[in-house]
Amino acid sequence: MAAAADPLSSLVSVLESYRGRDRVVCDAPPPAIRTLCYGCQLAGGVLARKSPTESEVGRRLLAVSAQLSHCRTVLRLFDDLAMLAYSRQYGLGAKEEDTIVRWLSVLNNLADQLYYPCEHVAWAADADVIRTNSHKWWTLSTAFWGLSLVLGIVRSLRILFQLRRKLRNRTGESLEQSQKEIDAQVKSEVLSILSSLADLSNAVHWLPPGFLWAGQFPPWLVGLMGTISSLIGVYQTSVGAGSGAV
Image: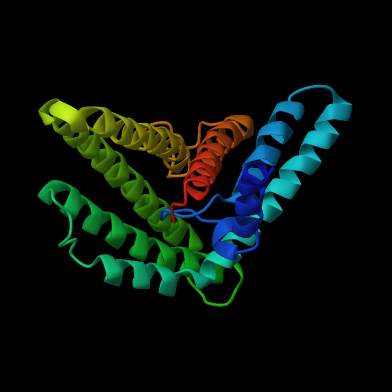
């Protein structure tokens, strides 16, 4: 009975903290607000394409999604110091065994750190707090987010390559244990790649028209990609919490 309650307790604990309620760039607990935001956009986008009655419901769901998105933007105003603390803790990644993974992580942290102030300036411009062109700042913040996602994907691919090589080199009694541990790591990295690819598709969509498929996604497709990414994050964190991972 206690074992069955553990996942629920872990989820409740995560939801009670802001960092569990939402996160965009860095590795963190499951984004519940984010999942609801994209879920509403997915459902609203699908319904908006149907009958007039369903279109009205869809419009309302899209309005809820827009408000949740704005809520997430405001909450991220407080993420800079947390990101800075994480970046300082990681430093230049001296503990990493692989040099490529190390520098990919450092660049990833840098892109994440630059993302926040750009988004803050864009938000402040839209709110008439400062006078500047918000569009260019939104574009810059989205570009840093996309760069972070690309670096994360390349980093995960590099780690998968290392895990495959490590498994080939293991022999003897430790092989079975190594197989289980490496399989778990491989699954985690594959899910991270899928999540990042889904987010990257949306990041490109939000860039200025003319770049790849920028501006061409309908609302339901943006919602679908975001929902896939968010649910993967929820799953990864629930598995991590259940195993005692931080």
